[in-house]
Amino acid sequence: MPSRATLFGMTRIVRVPDWDIADRLKKSLRESGISAGEMAARLGVNRTTLSNWCSGKVAPDLRTIRLWSIETGVPTDWLVGDPLRLRVRGGVDAIDRFLAECAARDSNPEPADYWPVAA
Image (cartoon, rainbow, N blue to C red; front, side, top):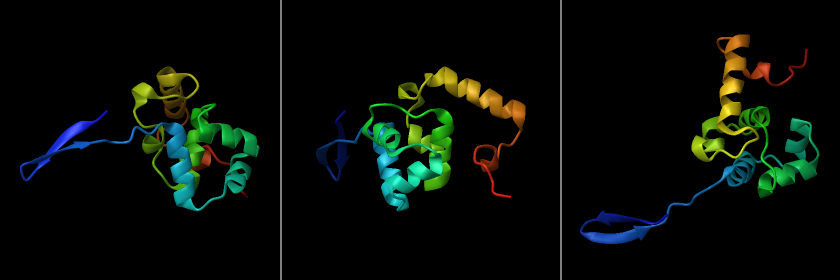
């Protein structure tokens, strides 16, 4: 939605982009330098699934978002954006269940909780 900004007595209309999770997935992938094929392999999904996430046809689940965050180095909060408009399976209730599950398992979940570590 456009808003007005005034600087030095001049008023301009400012448009702030409204990015959804698909836009943020694409941007984080591009900035990280990881190819789509490589990310699909890291997440253990096929390229069609990854393409569906990046095009906004299907939203990834919360565990996938967390792994994506770890792999690309961007904060999970930035990936999901506004939690009231969150388009992940299960919505805000799923986030609450996920956080409760993490708290029950460990008071300080580490990335190793979500990604198998090679021994």
